Length: 205
Image (cartoon, rainbow, N blue to C red; front, side):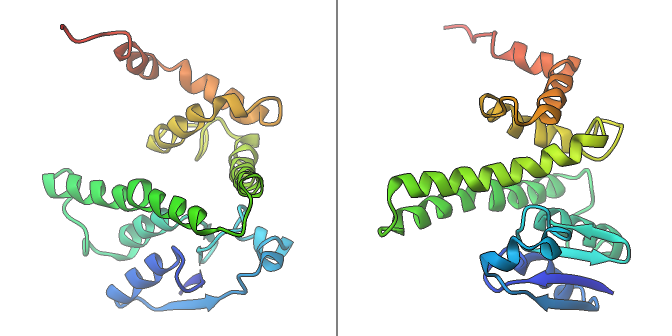
């Protein structure tokens, strides 16, 4: 049975809701969302960045809501709740899935920061840096024993991750050697170089 660790109002709503839509048996375990529990060794063994949701299915452990949605559909969906791959509908499906997480939710985070009137700018910056470092540490640890995000072979996950890492390259320094080397490997790829060459081309005036 699928097990989802859940906190109301967080991204764990996604996999739980999907299981319900698919009439899948799912064990929903609501966790203590205090910083003490989220920083505990017990929880970090399940969710390395200390966030929710997390999902367990037999020996599989996951900690990213969008990936959980994809996994549940692939393994248990039987073609339900997503269009046929390779179609225009599927393209739009993926577009809106990504929009929801990568575009729409970002201003919400800024809004919450601006509402924190009792916080100083310095404390907000410090908290943001702490969360950034915690997430980047997960990438660094993952790359300790592999060349790419899911193993020895390059996949689209490296396209997703490579862009994000490149955006924060100046913050890597000496603290993230695995991630720095990973980014170097990605930059050496012919396709990556081809993308960079596009920036050197200018449309006619």
